[in-house]
Length: 423
Image (cartoon, rainbow, N blue to C red; front, side, top):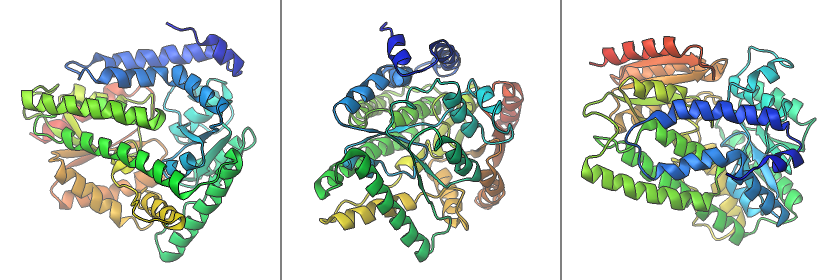
């Protein structure tokens, strides 16, 4: 195995702490994702994408940067990859999904805020994030109060740009959103010294739409009567989607999808027939966080759909690419991203309708609302989601948790009790 310690040291990382963090993540991965039976052969490449996230992927990004492709770090799926790529830059996610780094954040910031924010800041404070020193620009967005104040902290450490996300969807809000993306386009063009042109934007839209189409096919295959892939493995694919080179990722996913089609034909599945079908709704599960999906499927259920940012929100809609002028394409990009229905919006009737529709379309027997601790918008909206699902005849349960392993026993008991209700 190649030794990446020299690269990490050159990046200014705390190498010993970084290796400790990687060992922690490898253990969690082995005990959850790696413990599954009857995994598709094609999952090996996605496991490797996660394994190499701090290794070979960093080297690829460094080589790309040296060749003239600046790195733009992002924290949210509202930041348009198409604009970043059309400006000659490479987008990479910066969110933390590991419990390991949280104590390094809690030494400097309040404990009672979102685990994702604490994990992300903890990686920065402990000098264990290899993306921090290589990015040319970091981009935040205003989806929650904790994030907004996090940008104040990070902007003192790196070059930072904040996109204002309006939290209503009236005409004035749409106009503000499009203005914000114009400002963002100007900022990334300034970073790369490359202008976003019609041809460049068309190409980046095609790349991202191809990626979304492959993910949509995976989504459809998961909904089969006897799913050929676990929800946990599907989550691994999604986590890889956020970090990997999009063209390579799409190629590998199309190959996995072909394998899954054959598994359906052959009747090969990790699950027993008539296993309880569960949709997961709510907050994202970024790289390093596999707890809820693992516990659900270890309890005998199958996760057949994800109404999250590491699920359908990321890929469910394409960018309309029919316009033959730059302004028209930029407007299509803005429209596509503003259609995402985060819980920060008020009112959020579109999300309520979608949760019910997705659960029915996937033939889910029940819905788990997964809420990261202190994520107030999703937690408050959970009551409306529960009411909507109840009206549709779908049972649901809310799980509020963090990244730690301390509550796994309690969660397992609650999940098993919920599944018994579905009998």
